[in-house]
Image 1 (cartoon, one colour):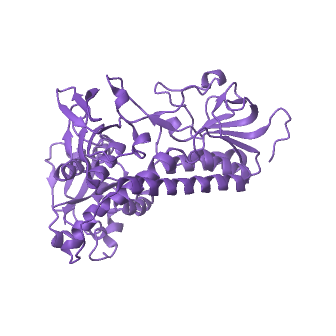
Image 2 (cartoon, rainbow, N blue to C red):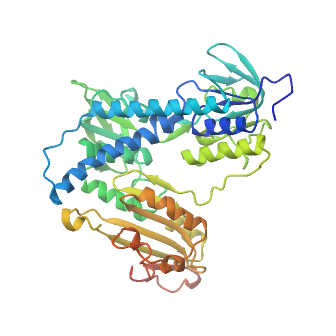
Image 3 (cartoon, rainbow, N blue to C red):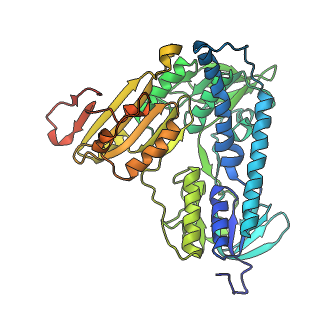
Length: 474
């Protein structure tokens, strides 16, 4: 219903035009609300403009190097391929411009008024548009400002770049040093190495991809090492210094010395809540600056909500979209529902890819009395011709009492596509019997998932005196 309260200019004001914000604005408007959305940069947010979409385009480009090599082994005779960085950047720019236009058109079609301006809160109902000085009174406010790269303090940090800038470099970095070893770091390390960069990862932890299943972490670290990517573990960047010929000297905490064309700082992301006026509106934030919300995305102020990375809960684009949709349906559509955060699948577009859903082995062992692990490592069929030594990993974590699948973790080609479908099975509380009853499709990678008939290992806290039992993968 449209507001008939004269003290409000709009029913909903959305701050931030990323995935969560535009979905919420469009759905709320379709429910009949009068909606205004403010975005100070470009519609589409991090994911579309300088995140998931351009990154995946770069990943696609990087994979041709392996394909060209494999093609020769399969009988193709090709001239020597040559990669042109400016052409890739230009192609990326065209696609991002097209997507931004699609976002703009969808908002206009839905009747959302989009304002290109920074917006800040003056109180719980007043939004100040800094570009033209207007003040807009809103019955409900949604904050969807996302997150920004988080940067530690060290000497010369201004010489580094973040994921915001790496997509638009004028020249291709022949020597790339990456600080950090999370999603962003590992994806860019893999794709730039494949495009021809000499890549070094400097990681404070003892292994890459903290929070992922241990077997997956080990598999990707081994794969990257085999691909020539250097891993400097248990170390961190201490100082950057400019040297001649536009090179950068990198000094690490452990005394390592590196020379780079570019240094990518990928130390994680922080909620984008600085100078939003949250304190004036009385909105509470956590120690990390994230906006604190309940299960309905509502803050401590009854008419102010927040979705997406600004809440620092599940920093994934599909989660932000679903939160925005749930908010709009619940508040303006009289169809209240909440986002289910259990078994959220995710992928890392490394080389090869990682797909994961549900509990890791260590998480399952901490929560369940008995846990069965089904695991297989193998070389894909293409390796029979190419001689590639890359090993795929498929792993299923199972409740040893109910036989229900608790988690699936895979490291192989097209893992992202596989995990999307596998998440349906995990979310539907499938058991290993369900998997084993499915007829395999041969020859495929997926057939290995339904061919693991006995646990590789069982962990049973009910039998504390008994040794761990290791079995065969098949």
